[in-house]
Amino acid sequence: MKAPATYTIGKLAAQAGVTADAVRYYEKEALLAPASRTSAGYRLYDGEALRRRHFAQAALAAAPGRHGQLDLFPCQG
Image 1 (cartoon, one colour):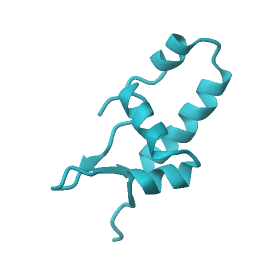
Image 2: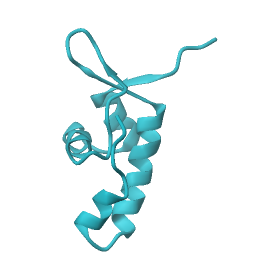
Image 3: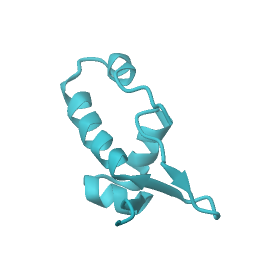
């Protein structure tokens, strides 16, 4: 069985079409959480994080106010 894909913050950002700083912002606002970290402390994201990132982008673009937007996606991680 193939291991699930994991992405570093830079690879996740590239796949999502945003900057690494944007991914860090989404993490700070509890929209994303890394699936794990390496022994050196680097964030590792999974395919679910990429899916959430795309969903969050669409919702943030459609929602009228910042605080209402963030309440839609409490991070479970």
